Image (cartoon, rainbow, N blue to C red; front, side, top):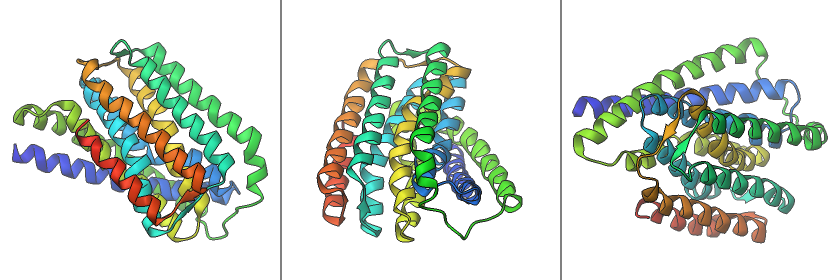
Length: 305
């Protein structure tokens, strides 16, 4: 049991470290070509920081641990919209345009609803997974064609790595993510069975762990005054995970949940708390340190619902 626990932690550490390295290098590469900070946050950074959820989804689906797949995504979603925002806002207050909150917040809620509908019968099949991934690709395309060009001229950062330096770092980071994801999932399932913990609860804890890349990247961005990356990364990641991260696992192997009824309280709480935080974002045009306390308090019940 101790070996499984140690390997689980090692796998999670490798996954988080690899994702952080890959995302930072990918951001430098995108900035090199003049893409805006907010667009990077919503797309490239959010996808990069969701690599742990994607890898976990594929490996867990392969091992038939559908509860772990869904638990990981729900735990990650809830932690990002509450804990991650609270931590980052304590570093530097979020400032968000109401239009962005309305547009991307609505897209986030729509992604969650799509996930709920896909999970209604307890199975997410390959065709559903493919359609979920296709919907996300369409979202990115519409985002770029409608807004990407306008923002590119606004937020170009001068200090960035050229492709010859960024690409090797991306590859190394993704390799760490792939290996770490396999080690974490296999040992997480083994550990859950050894101590009698439901795999869904392990998934919630894993979701908290795989949220660390979002917290780190958004926190650094906020501290450096790059609000576009900070806000975009968290909202964008919460759009990516319910459709793309879950969908990519289902494309390879059907995601089968043993007891869908046991998941509904956490799924509903995820949606409710997301609406609450988005309303707070819209009302105050951002999240300051006082509002961060509210977000933190909203996170705590996620372990008991």
